[in-house]
Amino acid sequence: MLFRHSLDAVAIADCIEAAVARVLEDGYRTADLYKKGLTQVSTEEMGRLVTERL
Image (cartoon, rainbow, N blue to C red):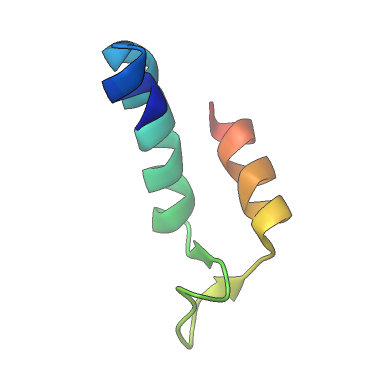
């Protein structure tokens, strides 16, 4: 939201959102979104996974 709305950096926001979507598609979730059959990770690990996909 920072990049898209405050900094008007739509291309960067799109890249970040796509990276998050890929992590979610790969089945990773933090505790607040976890469901049986997925892989639960910490917030720190989720951040690392998103960064790797950027």
